[in-house]
Each structure stands twice: as C-alpha cells, then as structure tokens.
Image (cartoon, rainbow, N blue to C red; front, top):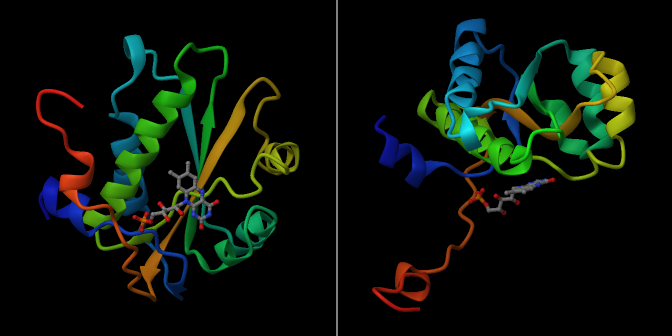
Length: 161
Ligand SMILES: Cc1cc2nc3c(=O)[nH]c(=O)nc-3n(C[C@H](O)[C@H](O)[C@H](O)COP(=O)(O)O)c2cc1C
C-alpha cells in the first residue's frame, strides 16, 4: 500500500478480532513513529509496546474498548522538550498510517489517559518526569466505520483564505 492509499483508507478502529500481531509488525509500526518529523530533530519520545492481555486490560481506565486490542503502543514524551506535543502528534499519526499499511486497525486514544496517567506510568515503570501522551490500540479490524469528512472544497483555499 502506498502512502496516499494508507492516508485515504485509515480510519479509527475500535473493535478488533482476536489475533496475535507478529512482533516484527509492531516494531515496523513503532519504527514509523521513530522516523516522524520532530522540531530541531529532538526526538523526545519513547514507545512502550504492550502485548500481555492482563496489562492491556488495565488500560480500560482510558476507554473501555481498548481491552479487545491485540497490542497497545504507549506513547511516552519528554515534556522538557520544546515541541513535545507537536512531535508526539507527528509520531502518532505515522504509527496510525503504518498500522493501516500493514492491514491493522488502530486508534489515537487520549480519552481518560490524562486522568489515569500516574496509574499507567506506575504499571509500566515510566519515569516520573515523562508524560503519557496517548495509547494506540492495534488489532485486526472488526468494523469498517465511515466517519464523514469535510469536503476538500470547504477547507482548501487557493492563494488567500
Ligand atoms: C487528539 C486526538 C485524541 C483522540 N482521542 C480519542 C479517544 O480518546 N477515543 C477514541 O475513541 N478516539 C479518539 N480519537 C480518534 C478520533 O475520534 C477520530 O480520529 C475522529 O473521530 C475521526 O475519525 P477517523 O480517525 O476514523 O478519521 C482521537 C483523535 C485525536 C486526533
């Protein structure tokens, strides 16, 4: 699948089939995050891949349906870095697209992550000075949502707004 096809076909998937994702595919997805654009090339990120079901079930505090995911990537950012939010967003989108390209469904989950950030950090031994920006559940899609999108002509302006 080429990049434009992945961009056009990516959808947030919130229901997954029961399956195991090969380790190599999960590494490929995180590698796409690692290669994202990042202000001044600071790369203020770490990624924790969680595949153990009892741990994934703990993430239900962020949003209940994540427990059906085969894996969850926890995006950990260094808030001391100037553009950590922008950098994290770029890495997350790259990972969503890589998941799509490999045939998996995924979703950008912030939900109640912030409310339960300390719990998630403690479960995963994430250092106190780091932030959990989002969870990315991944699995074989068990739904095909079609959210409406604004038409191009509504948001595209040539030369002037
Ligand atoms: C910053 C951000 C936070 C999001 N948090 C959640 C979330 O907590 N739970 C969820 O189900 N989807 C979440 N999403 C996914 C959006 O709901 C989804 O992208 C949007 O509805 C458009 O659908 P699409 O991704 O299929 O195009 C989030 C997306 C972004 C960019």
